[in-house]
Image 1 (cartoon, rainbow, N blue to C red):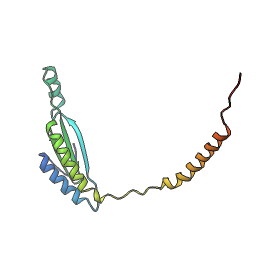
Image 2 (cartoon, rainbow, N blue to C red; image 1 turned 135 degrees about the vertical axis):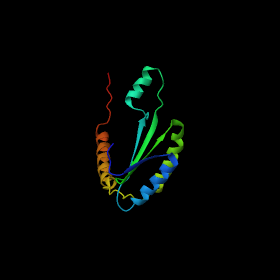
Image 3 (cartoon, rainbow, N blue to C red; image 1 turned 90 degrees about the vertical axis):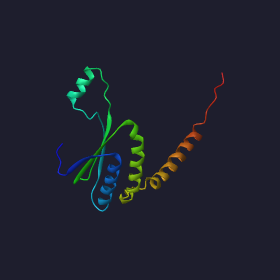
Image 4 (cartoon, one colour; image 1 turned 60 degrees about the vertical axis):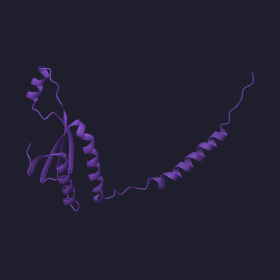
Amino acid sequence: MSGTGSRSVLQPDPFLNELTSMFECSTEKGSVWVTFKRSSMKSKAARNKMQSAGQSIEYRCLVRATDSKKTISTSLSAKDYQKFQASYATVLKAHMNSLKKRERKDRKKTAEPEKKQVSSKSESSKKQAAPTSKSS
């Protein structure tokens, strides 16, 4: 993989510490991209050889983070994933304050008068179309 910055594979806890510092450096300007990918950490040839030999392949979760200057990554086993996810969520929640609020059009105020008009029309049409009974 080509890149302009340095890359390092870390253990999960140092990865989270480094991710925290990446978020702190990018509070004023910049972005941090985090990707999760299933990986066996083996080449395709080695995986094919293991499958033909009948060996099971243990898949791991490869987590990468980059801020365009620096790339860090870690590899997680299935048993470590839940603990990592909880810690990762804590880091994300702590650094979501620098996001800008999205400006939304207030649709509720414009939709309420339309609903009232539609509902009053439907009620008046129901009154006009009263059920009739047939006598035989």
